[in-house]
Image (cartoon, rainbow over all chains, first blue to last red; front, side, top):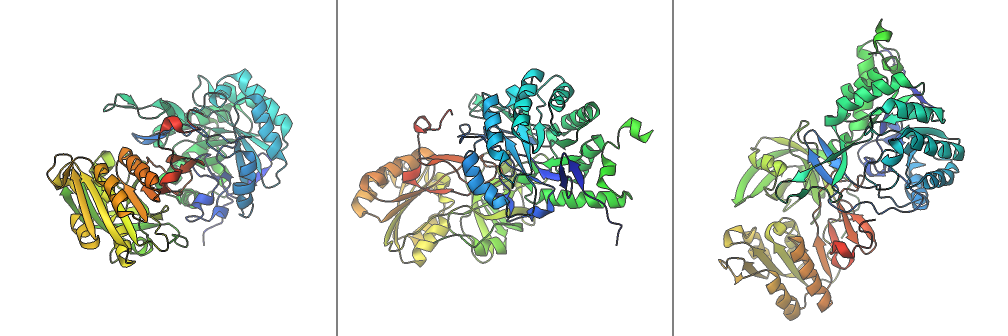
Length: 310
Length: 271
């Protein structure tokens, strides 16, 4: 019997049983993956983006495979807050796993309204404020690429909810650390990064972009070094916990993000390759710690920083 | 007929045969007993053709037949994934998720069916014509292809269907023209109880309109680029009269009356 590793991590007011969660938009509500994994083995389920009213999303084609990654342009299709509560949330409430709801809006007022509406739902453990989706014309990334806009939307949502508030940041900026500091100053309890990188693929047979919307968000292992660098920068810049993501395919990738300074890790594109990827990585992280004689998974957080190993 | 009760699982499938059956078309046979025993006509599997970071996405394939613990997949080489599949040799092991999706429905009391297959549209029709034969449904098959050599699954169709009609672009077999020139007459003359269609989307749309005009129910199997295959990612949506639905779990087989074919007529387009 190996020594037990304390796998718990804390994000705001939430204590998660392990650092592994799902990346919004890649896991539906979790119901879609219940045939493959026991959701109670996850640190948290982060749902697909939820808006106050139903959104239809973008036209098809919505995806394209790229070297070591993929582009998506789903456009935050979702049935709206009421249908979400009656359907996916009611189902998730029967599962033994913290539910983090990703919030989207076209305007500050829409973000505030959806937060206010869902704040009354006791089955929601936390919100992840999505100010970084590259696939919508209004809102989304527009709020995550300027400090004043990011601060404004976080201020409005912070005032509308007392739940733990995570803000999901865009990598499509010059200095992600200054955005992180801006949202921390407005009361964010944690930041998550990175959302997808804006990209494009052109089909040389048709002479047209592969995606109906032209551009889309790049994810998968191709973006991982960019994501690790940004997690490193942001974890140095803010005092709140960082949730790292971007091309986490296996245990070592998750450990890499934690060594860079992430307290939690989200798994996205890997779910499409292996529907049990999240649980495999959670189990793998525990073994990773056992093999290195670590008593707590928290010992990994920022352990690659020069000042820590000095 | 329902797929309820068969939850999808990941199964390691051994490739036992992989042969070229027509220009650019292969037939791969996998040993996959769990999926083969559970799968229903028109459902699909999500295949991981190669490991490693170069192939991030699985590829969805209709299952042509599922005899004796094996899955037969008819595929056309269209890109990197199917090229890699064509190069795979017996002994290779790939993992697949299946069975997935809603397949063909055969309503109670169906006595006469018209099955329409255009090109690789024959791929999801093998299990269907076998099921129809098992139920004693008199089946007429209308098939189209560029030329005689690219008419797929001829032996099975001729053995299981009461009548088969073909059309080729070059006239090398049957009618010189499109399969839709056959189906109009077949629907009007034979008055089938139901029409099943798979093939290029413009062809499916025409046959669906012919069936609708004759008041005959019609089911179509639609193809979309797909990431998760289990309903989570919303990559594969189809425009329907009741909103955008997922080809992977709400389809791939849809009631044709439900499908909004013209992107310009999708009330949610450009939203």
